[in-house]
Length: 328
Image (cartoon, rainbow, N blue to C red; front, side, top):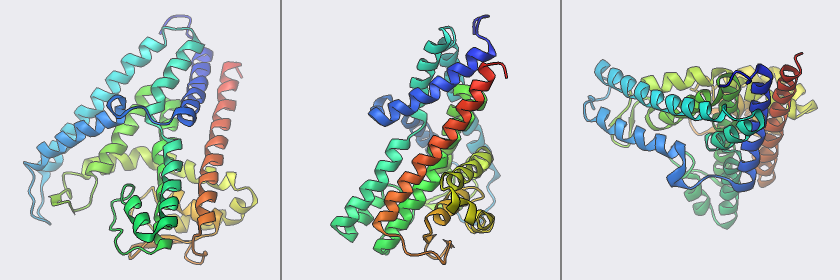
């Protein structure tokens, strides 16, 4: 960073970076796979996970501190690579004038968030459901790890809407939260942690591998980094819903605690409450169980709610950054 790069310049660069990243996301969507840093993270985690699993105890219920330790070391190594690369790129950007730094950082931030793709996936599931239930199930399989073979049309739609709500935090709000706090290294660290949890963070056997101990570090790291953003995401969904959000606010904590995850229940419960629908995972939990069955129009409303929540959150952050830039 040059001597001329003041806190006001930093605030301006961060604000511009957010706007550039979201505009590029809306206009162009995801970068090519070969250039996508989250895909690179996934490649590293895939190979590292294979290495850990070759040394892990595959018998369920057996204590395996060795696998936990090896996975933690590999996680920390990958996280250090991501943070180090982000620091170098951010340092190069900050050598530019604040507006150019903001534009460069926005282009670098974009692959770490995915609002357009998230909304598109929900539309795609709904379009597949319109063709047939089997088509809807097949498309949903791209989004969730649960068994979809016995899901009804309503349950397929519920699952897609849950994915939208959960990933509104994981793929948008949380990366932006950590970017505002810690710059590109913060956003990169979060996306690495969230990707590691998606690939390693299973409580037991998954696809013939035992992740009960090998996935513990990744799951706990993601829980810690997602704790505040998940609750912010839920709050934004309530605020963006206006009077409806105010009316259901007191129900949110109890509904959010119904899920096994300490974080994902918050945005999912908020979405269920503001839309007045039931969302759930068969045999595991039901959020807003008194709500109506989700219909195609509710899938559209969920996408609109997610967009309004992001717009509201970005507006609040920009106002705060403007205050910093103005010296308030």
